[in-house]
Amino acid sequence: MAQNILIVVQARMASSRLPGKVMLPLLGKSLLTRMVERLQMIRHEAAIVIATSVNAEDNIIEQEAAAINIPCYRGSVNNLLERHYMSAVKHNADIVLKIPSDCPLIDPQIIDEVLDFFFQHPGKYDYVSNLHPATWPDGNDVEIMTMACLEKNWRLAERPLELEHTTPYIWENPDQFNIGNVSWGKGLDYSMSHRFTIDYREDYEFINRVYEELYLQNPGFSCDDIINLITEKPEIYELNAVYAGVNWYRHHLNELNTISADQTKKAANK
Image 1 (cartoon, helix red, strand yellow):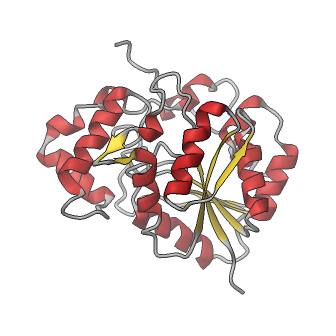
Image 2 (cartoon, rainbow, N blue to C red; image 1 turned 30 degrees about the horizontal axis):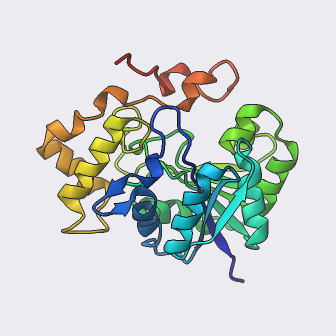
């Protein structure tokens, strides 16, 4: 029986470090649009919804979604878990993927690999990701959950970090959920050394340069293509290397039982 797969892309204009980052230009289109292009390249059949807030400043997100013919759900400003759940309910999802909008370099093949793992073990897992532990370069975040898992998460999660970051209640409670993880087949771990996500101006400079170097030759360039590029041109790697390993965990180490200090670092003072 076919299952409805829904990719939820959380996006907003507010950002303390890089306001409006999802609408920054990449070769003439917005970062958000470029990311959706990559999501549409996956082999599995999936619907996409952009989940943003009801704030007026996010009207532009809804307008951009309409321009690229992608549905948009607008909900709570701070409760992203609710945004994901209500988006899934509205679109009759059976399987929900959480992929944040700060991953415009995400490799479609990695998404397919995590989905393949999930479907190769029918009924075994409530939640599968490539983040616990992470091995691929930061910015290839894939989290998959059944609708039942997401609903249980939505009913039981209460802490602010669980509502803001959507899935911590799941992976912090392995006694309540069957959890799987997919590691990079190369046996490497670049999660703390390579940064393909966007949160700072330097990240945008990195991502923009990658697009300039790779997109015109191959719009579906892969994670390996990026690694080869920055190996050949280390000056590109250096654009945002100072922030490699910086992620949201650093603010919540005293609240997270399954995350250790070696999985994050503080941002450099610049």
